[in-house]
Length: 585
Image (cartoon, rainbow, N blue to C red; front, side, top):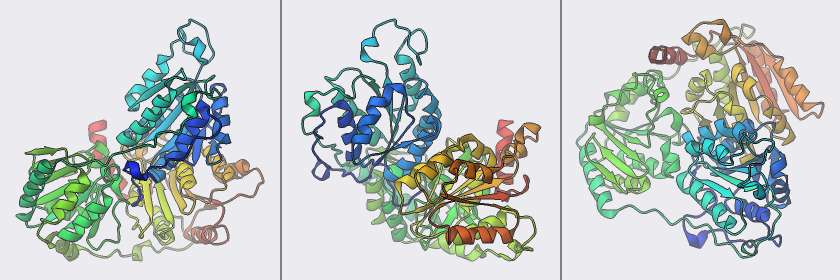
């Protein structure tokens, strides 16, 4: 995750005084109003799949000079792209037609909801005159019921706005956008197809700027929590800090690092929080992920007599079955608005960043846990990674060379599967971001997310790692990357199928049809010369491909297909499967 990214801090202010307050376009229509509001919250690109009920709305979006419409190959991919975009910009928008479009994006919206990503999902609805009738309409689920689509979205959005009348349209649009940003969750805005081009006096007025009053902690609750936490940690001999994924939505990454600076404790992260803490921090010890933790990290976390978890999510993938050791009696758990100490008192109405800033002033400096780490740490020996340059390529050799590619201008995106574990072992330079979808874990997510993230952050170069099974889910969006002129590097790890599932349960259905992947990319490019591809079988070919991607082809899309054996996996995946398969199978 990008260390400087906050889902609530996205070129907007937390106070009214610093809010953006441009005037509305001379086109005082609903469509122009919505487009202007998207620009106000920092959106410059909108992902869409055209459909008959949104054509008028898309016209108004394209008419807004500050917005760029990106037409995707399908709705699922567009939703994934919006997810990736929001991880960089803090919010994103996607637009689809009634039912067939809206219901196709449900999986992507569910993932964003699960991962606390604010998305504005805008769907077109039939003409407003059809409300209250029994008409038979195309795309409708008979009998006609406009609420069926919304009911599908209710569990995976935090607000549902139905705009079928101009009188209160601006209020509903503003309420949806505000709620998405406040809750850091997706919302759905349903707009009747006949309304985007309609003017109304409310759209001709200067809009009230979006206003997000600064959240404050209850002073008495904050003081009590800090006093209890300081007493708990100051009596510990080897306390540690562990950062979790909710650091981002709490906008507390900076204060958490400042706390680490002040207390001297060893500093680890949970897997979904990789990239939120600078990995060049002097006390950083790696990723704590139970049995598949980075080397020497688990020994320190699990031997600590006290630990502070900042914004954790304890799902089954993070806990790796039962291998994740967490003793509530030794823990302080800090969530965005509450603190729980040692399975005992809970303190509410506390902002995470306020808690860290106050606690940093009350803790005694204690470097014992980090000193223990330094005593057991053995630098990685690379001898075993060297092989005959023409021998079949292995995963370890691939990621040895990947590590050397990273810089402050890089972003790493990992799809579900073995790439999770291999990317966790990468040491991110200062400014290098990392994104994965660990909790929802929808395979194929990375291709759409790469499109969105690269579009949001053109100054960075995205390096995306995906398996062949994942790639076959969402491969079409490589076409959109080419159309947008992106310069991503896609590593497709071709091992012939679903390796994780094969390790869980060896069966023929885990083997997939092999594609001519590099040929597919050239077919999508269609002779335009916007891409470069390579298929590598050995280290010699890999180093040559990387040199080309980082050199002569640095300004175009690069696709490197890496051929490996299905059973050439990281040791962490083998351990993960052993721990996870038992409760599943």
